[in-house]
Amino acid sequence: MGLQVQEALSFVPPALLIPKYANEYGVSEDEAADLFEETKKFLVKSVQGGEHTPTRRLDMMWHMFILFTEDYHNFSSHLGGYVHHRPTSARKCDHVCGGGPAPCCNRSDVTCENPRVTH
Image (cartoon, rainbow, N blue to C red; front, side):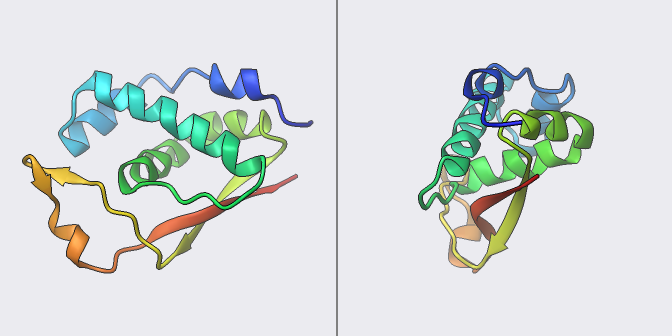
């Protein structure tokens, strides 16, 4: 199956994903839903080629989405195969805690680099 951009971008999140993310990261459900939309766009762009590194918040949404394995697998099928998360030591920190930069910005935490699709 090839790239199906419209299907990927219109993919509905698993019912528990948005409230779970909002609760665990202290954001509103609207903000979590917006971030899920950005995550889908990032993954589509990533499989279309080029170098793409997600922001920290987007990466955390991606991590949580992966936990919903069946849904993530179904989403990935619209992108031509399973989209793998490939960790690296590169880091972009836009994570905000209490209105200011998070302490994580001063550490070398792991984020990810270009996703890889397998068929």
